[in-house]
Image (cartoon, rainbow over all chains, first blue to last red; front, side, top):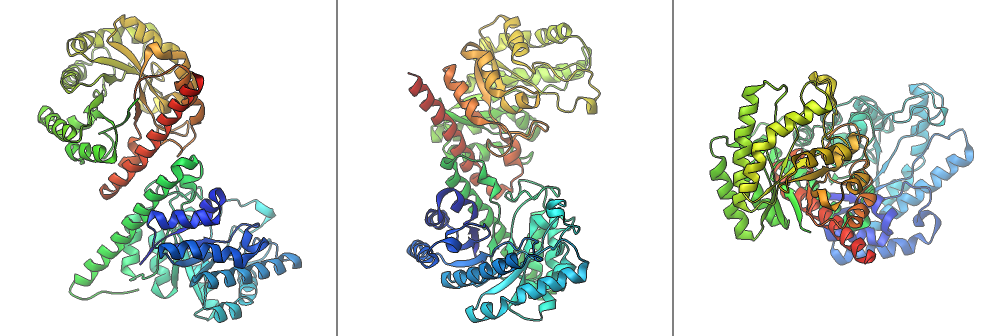
Length: 301
Length: 292
């Protein structure tokens, strides 16, 4: 169970090579390469050169790329050009993930402007399925992430969001009927949706939970700050990960914690982030040991 | 200008001796003794515990430079039980601070449930008069802190608080007419009171501003978190300290940041706090140098 940090905020502030170097130097054991933004060198520039440069830095530290974040789908699927663009960017992101060595790429499910639950599910299955042949060929799993309602009026959408509950996310994952599709729990998104992150984990279970986005939130705003800075119960969350014998990575997504800090404090903040991640990983492992010691009888979900 | 943090703010069960060691190991250059926490943690062993803290601090060569007297719970002029309790604990705190070489003992002015500005000031003069003498004898100073009335209606108070503005805090300091009474600016309290921490610094000036409680907040709740985690603008505050040629310490009071952490993360939290304090201090010194 490795501790992992995304390049997201660091790339915005320092560029991709420096971001990778900072994550490695801080002591993280894995890198999550973020490809959410509209404009990134991997979409607009010489992506093979970008990958080469990042790998050269990470290899020097012996730190692998283990996870990535694919492009946002937005909710413009009635727009054929937008659908095409999402597909092209998704395919590029999968290719970049594979070149980097990442085994799982997180994708946000799409929320289209109008449509009932069945319509939304069908559109997501149709669109994401187009990427499955490439994902299989490249050996990169696609992890669908739970979402939350933060800006209900955005884009005049009439639906709050999809995959807000553990049941709905499970239904989405199961609808593909393919092991190449897995799930990602974002703890803050769960809290903002009125769900308990620990219960989310237990309902998804080991079979469906392939990745994490760990962040704290006050249950109202999608804060993306560090655990213990707001109201999510991380003791309960780490217990749930132990209960299901989670074996994936402990991946942080707390970029807002340092987003308003001066550049000089970004690295100390990253070191603190690493300590928080290591603490969470240690708690999961301690709790797993306790469960194993209990008469050798462990009920796994 | 040393970087300093408080021993308070690690939860009521945290051993102050261990916390002192963590602060020293994090690289802080001074320690602020939180007496409220000491009286809560070991009410019958405060003096012995301070001695143990001092031994640890001396081993690391880190001085005690500031302290925080217990917070008074007095609500009325005839609230004798709380008055006696406060005066007893505050006297112990000031004497121990003096013995430890503390330069400024931070005190909260009292807010009575009701009363005019003059009545509130008169009561504070009465209450603190004897403590000022103890401070003078102990070779230390009392630094009156600016307050904020962030939930006055919940506690039945008819006044938001006293010393919310720089003008009022300066009036309180002047009223004592003693070189043993100075001022402490709490950045979060100022912000909640609708004051700009930077303007607060300029209004007080170097003659009255001897100590700081640096904390960030959202202007509504007294969140006592680290700078850059909430809404205060730090650049103007740092420039104001340089402009008045502030020479006191850079003391953090981000007590709710550390209190929220599991014990195993205290050291990591202090490392980040130290980096922030150092950044603020270095910027103040940089701006002072440029001004020269």
